[in-house]
Image 1 (cartoon, one colour):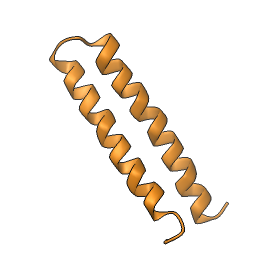
Image 2 (tube, one colour):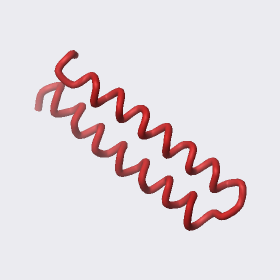
Image 3 (cartoon, rainbow, N blue to C red):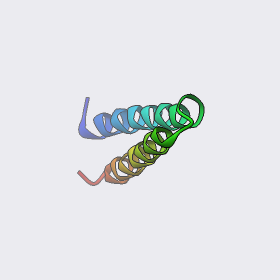
Image 4 (cartoon, rainbow, N blue to C red):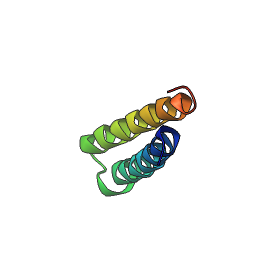
Length: 58
């Protein structure tokens, strides 16, 4: 496995975790904690975007 494959797997895993966190915030926690889960999920999307941008450059 080379560096690009590792970044691709990290991107995919972070997108899945981000979707799970946003779904938890939307459907499980309807109070203030839901906003926290959703914002952390969006943060995971941002980091996954950076990992995806790094593919081929590292």
